[in-house]
Length: 141
Picture 1 (cartoon, rainbow, N blue to C red):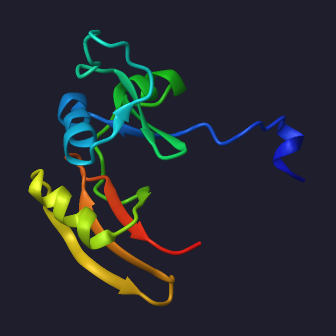
Picture 2: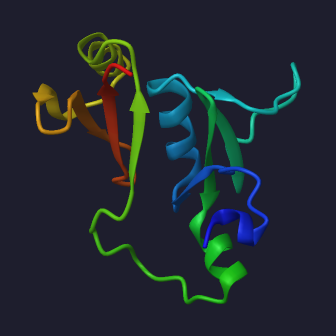
Picture 3: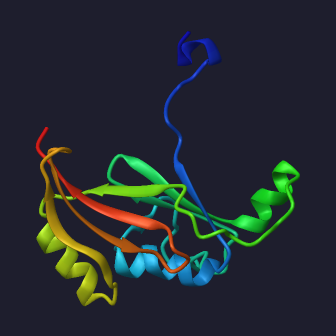
């Protein structure tokens, strides 16, 4: 069995579901410095939501209002339970430098840059406004 059995073309995007869209939007734009994938010059930014798609290297990282996704799948909208269910991993050239930039933009690191020999990486962690765990990750190909 393979993805071809589904007619899989490619990985589409990671979509982070949020409750406070504006605050989350500003974090991904201002703290992480991500750019919108489709944005006409002079057009208003989609800071009010319910959806925005950012470019993260070769991938798309989108924000979507959680209540809209709940409605789309017929789920009851309920509070988050505080358990991490996703980690957004952003590969960077220099974790220490990236962590300093994020801090200078107002982020608080949850873990300082550290080597993870078992993973073959150097990482630092921070959280988006609603708690999504963000990993800054450095490794060689």
